[in-house]
Length: 342
Image 1 (tube, helix red, strand yellow):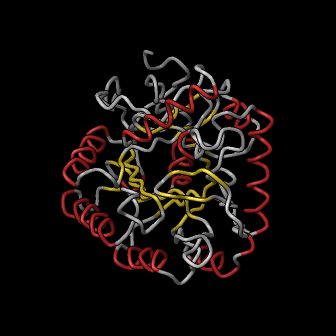
Image 2 (cartoon, rainbow, N blue to C red; image 1 turned 90 degrees about the vertical axis):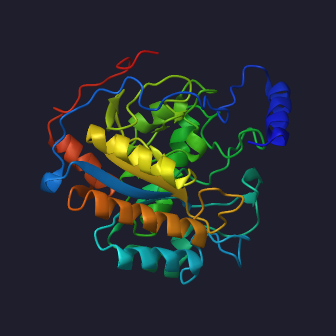
């Protein structure tokens, strides 16, 4: 984060109150593999590890309507790049964390006000047709509109961070209504900007317990559930307060050698490699967007897996990972809150 944004967030904390916790600030010195306990996991087909490629922010925004292509141009560059990946790597499966009504204004990653226009996924018939036809792509829920209704612009992208249980549940239900109208079944949920409710008594967690998701993705090595302390594994799915959490652990924005290192570490544990980027071709100001620069990086990562671990990786959608984990009768781990030391 730039010095400008740090100063800006500090100012907004003063405006909204000193009790606000800035979840955008990370402890970069923390080792994401600390306290991990190696498990003997039996992935399908005798694989030694699982792999999922996932993208946040897939939605109806396009260059014509919205300024940037987040997939909304059904025959545009973003979806053409996806088709290229699917054609080049026939074993690859993906999970798109989609925003059903992405009604926001974006400037260099700062979400700060609503934008006029209709971005409901259910009303972009051509895009829905393109998406449903790609059977190797799973759609999961990424909030309702990716914009916090109470505190914009401070942590404005963290839609659920300052919301209580009822407000959170209403947004989830509204999002699911749009997916149903589009004829899209969703099994998983990830909150925008990892806002799980550090500033609102974790109302989102209570709302998710009332929802019917097969899994949630509430953690990265330094965000969400693991922001201030390690609560869940960064390698394996974890049962956390009645929710099956599947971690995100490798970012497309990292240097390629760092990505290789993380992949090797996760495989040494026999875990799930979850490589994440953002579904936006702007890979300049959005470090993990998937323009041509990062598309080449994805291809090199997939080639690395194919060469070094040929035939040993199970490529899966996250809903398939959740099904396998549950199908093992919970024998892999019995983690609840407190499994990791605070």
